[in-house]
Length: 62
Image 1 (spheres, rainbow, N blue to C red):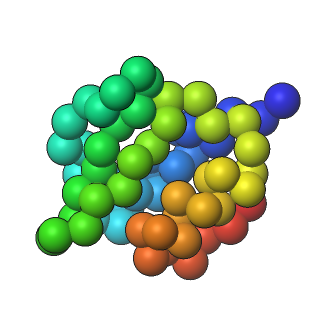
Image 2: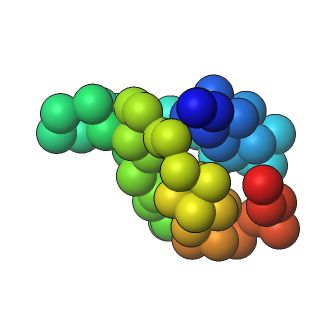
């Protein structure tokens, strides 16, 4: 089973997003300008990873 969490974090960093703080459970909050995106600590579904990319405005899909 592929884990997409590391790939999502790398893409967010490449596109100017920065880690802001830890959220509830194993979630982290990333920010860029006034926008926020929540990233789960374990992403096993490519659909979830693609949803995060879409919310972040990044045209990257797995």
